[in-house]
Length: 293
Image 1 (cartoon, rainbow, N blue to C red):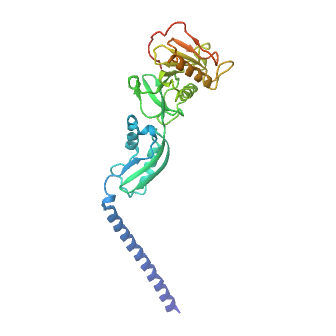
Image 2 (image 1 turned 180 degrees about the vertical axis):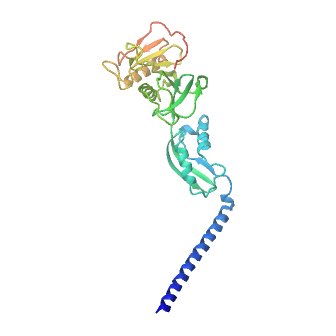
Image 3 (image 1 turned 45 degrees about the vertical axis):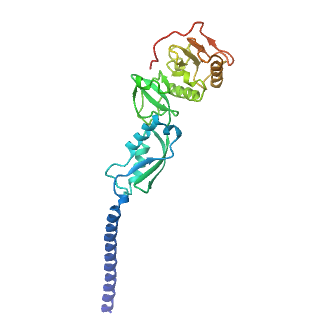
């Protein structure tokens, strides 16, 4: 009886040893196979990051630096290997931290040591002037990467929002302040308008009447120095007989078609009084300095 039990135990031990030996051989074989695979030409060398399905505005040459900056910040480092199981996740997280990316859609490995990523980008809407510098902001009020001098933003084609109280947040973060949100909303309304090129700035210094309750809360600066469009309250905050934002846009469109200038060559045009007519300065515009932050 004891001999039979001993033989059974010996058989079981032999089976365990065989299984462990087989597992060890498999591990050694897999290690060798991995080294061989890693040594193949298609897996050696630097891994590249490609951003695909870019929106049309990012395909233009003047915006190519945005794509390059995202690749430089989020792309694989020289020491990364294509077979690294953590590589895709690491690249995705680095891209998500970029101030230019609203959402990372997909990140995947492709043949030829390439990682391809699809993302939703934040499109610049306006400059925000604050102190000695200007900052890009998107239509959701999120600050985009970079800090620029006033000279750098001239001729860039975006409207400037001036008079914002709060300072800039970190890139990728929302810029706080009701005055900023009002400026962004008005700047967005102007996008696509036929006269948009004649608007150089959205002025929010007097937002809510904080400087002078009797004056226009918001104003538009035109490309004629010193000329202003007295807009009124923030879009959606109109009271009394003040026209809606859409009616004001229509008024300015009518001035553009009739006079080829939304400011009519005057120092100011006031669109706060009626949905059908505007008040204008009796004199032509007087040249003054540029915008103040």
